[in-house]
Length: 112
Image 1 (tube, one colour):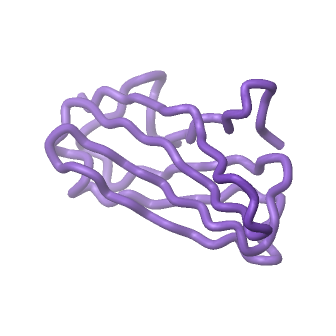
Image 2: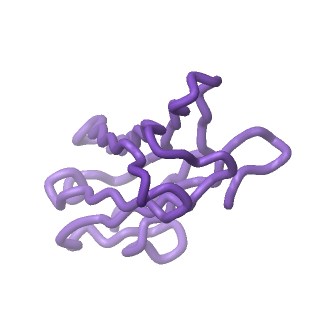
Image 3: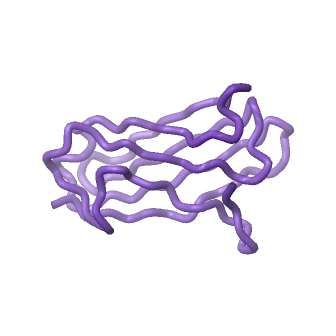
């Protein structure tokens, strides 16, 4: 489970990245979001992939009963990766119980 004293959720992880670099030739980017404290069915998770050339590419998932407590996976297509020099991404969680929106630390990648 993630979350820390700062109140921010852990940054997303791009499986295909090496450190802060991502190859522009990847077929897709697999973005993993690890479970957070209080994760529950009905939570809405919104991922923002923001390329300096391609712009924002938002993706959303709703946590299912089976998904609570498990890593979430988002797939970003190559068309959102190849033309960028840099990409920034983060996610927000709107808890199903109506409590305050949670925000992740951002992740920055250089597309090479």
